[in-house]
Length: 209
Image 1: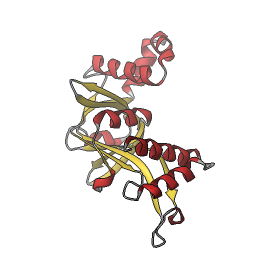
Image 2: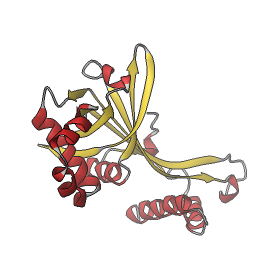
Image 3: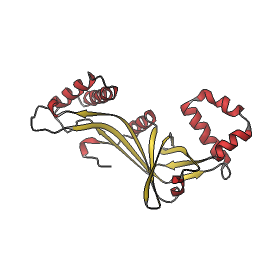
């Protein structure tokens, strides 16, 4: 990811919080020399200061065939907002876009019911705990035949993150006056995404005071 110094964010705790808040992300792999992407929910975990991502794909989704060979990339994104040059003090300015993104790289390890039933159960339980804990009793009360059929139709994965990159593009390359003006304008927007970016900008400004 292109990360000019002003926009780099390397605080792991901050990046993990963002990933968990925006955990429906994009997984990109190279399959037969061609980029392939899936949009899926992730479980983000830390074990002994190591970040791990868990998830699954439909078995008919051929992207999993690229696992265990080369890096895949999980892309987490959140709110974003157009920034008009009219908000800057300097007239000779151009339009841009503010946003936050986190990239996580790693080689996914395949989890299947046949080869690793305990790992498959753990992955499913973690997904349920993360997204709808109340569903757990319902899931475990379903027939074994049904649950095994569902789990045989997916390929789970565990991806140890070997590189984590964060980009918080919040007008940090502009003057404080410009940043305050942009933030205040976004906070008054009717667009919730724009307001969210305005709030991130305001928080960033307060931290740097």
